[in-house]
Image 1 (cartoon, rainbow, N blue to C red):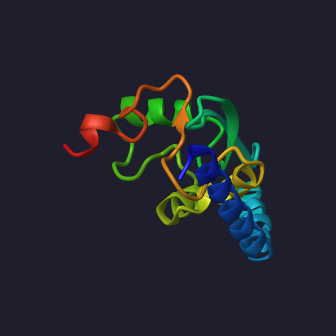
Image 2 (cartoon, rainbow, N blue to C red):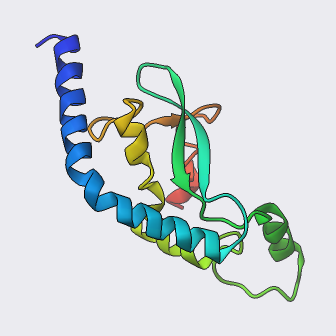
Length: 142
């Protein structure tokens, strides 16, 4: 089977699946967007610069799971001797739940609808990040 025919079949499957799940997903998108908005000030969505398998750049959508002052919170947690040990201080309570369940990636259904991503095949790479560095790399298994 030719590469072009394979891509057309994958795109047709993606569109069929998106149109099938979109009526189910939209209420969840709205509910999660409200939860993100009410849990902390700031934008509801993150837009990450990514590259698809064909090398083209696009904006990948995700729900924001961190506080808008995440870097300052992390710095305080690292430098304050009285800071409580435990979870990541950058994450909101809603964000922690969404990351654990994978719901922070639900807006990517828009990227699939636009043809920038696929339900099938490799995960996209973030632009400017070397492979293996985005998910903890070597240290994740340590």
